[in-house]
Length: 94
Image (cartoon, one colour):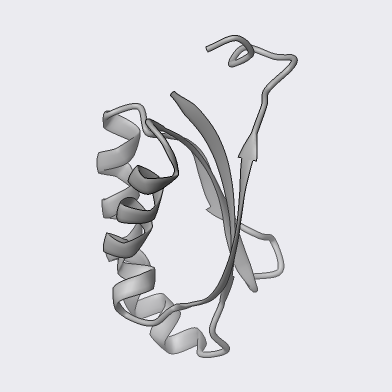
């Protein structure tokens, strides 16, 4: 399994974001239940959000992101994806 962080920047449309957010959160909740999402939430300033994923590989992550309502509904203006090696903490070595 591979860890990834995904930093998403939202479009500048608060109404559209509020409309799609429940779909996005429901989608991520299904991934929490499978162990593929370990933490997620918006930045305090409302400009984007951050998710920690654990997937088989980058291809699986790309499929997950492609199905995310923030992608399909055009909310994600940009994403920065990084593979992450956890060295310390409760998830280290997993």
